Image 1 (cartoon, rainbow, N blue to C red):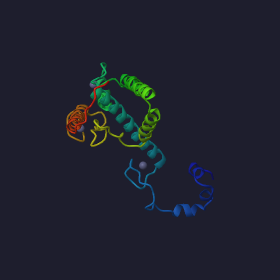
Image 2 (cartoon, helix red, strand yellow; image 1 turned 135 degrees about the horizontal axis):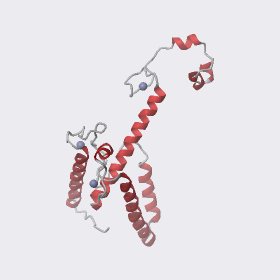
Image 3 (cartoon, protein in one colour; image 1 turned 180 degrees about the vertical axis):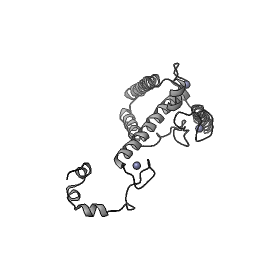
Image 4 (tube, rainbow, N blue to C red; image 1 turned 30 degrees about the vertical axis):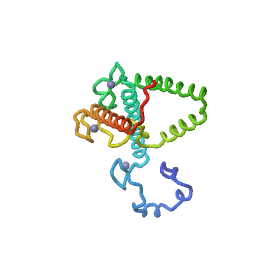
Length: 205
Ligand SMILES: [Zn+2]
Ligand SMILES: [Zn+2]
Ligand SMILES: [Zn+2]
C-alpha cells in the first residue's frame, strides 16, 4: 500500500515487510529535533524546515543591522525615516529597512567605483578583484560576517525575545540601543588602538 512516507523511502526500504518496520525503535542515530527538543520528533521534515527558516531570518536580520551600523559608524549616516517602534524592535533597526538597503548599495557603488578607478589608473585591478572575491566568498558562510579592522560584527551579539525590547544578552532595556552603544564603543577603542600603533587612518573619502 503506497503511503506518503513509503514514497519518500528508497525502494529497498519501502518493500521491506511491515513487521520489520514496526520493530524498529528510536536509536541514538536518530537526528535530534531542536524544535521539539527531542529525539522522537513526529514531524522532522517540517520542523527542520521551520528551524532553517528561523535561522535564515536571523541571518537576514543580522545583515540588515550590520549594514546600518557600518554606514552609521563610518559615515555618521542614519535613515531619516525611522522604523515604527514595534517593527524596529523586532528587526533591531533604527532606520527604515528599505532606505537602509538602498543607502548601502549607493555607498557600495560610490566606494567601489572609487577603488576600481584607482586600480585601473594605478594598476592592481586583478589584485583588487581577487581580494574582493575572497571577502565575498567568505561572506557565504553561516554565522556573523567577518569583522573589519574597526568594526566588530561578531562577538556577543545583542539579541531580544520576539517583539520585546530588552537585550537578552546584556540586560539593557533596549536591545537596539545596547547594540549601537557596544558597537560604537568597540569602534572607538579599535580606532584608538590603530592610532596608537602609528597607523594613520586616512580620511580620504
Ligand atoms: Zn520536531
Ligand atoms: Zn538610526
Ligand atoms: Zn546587548
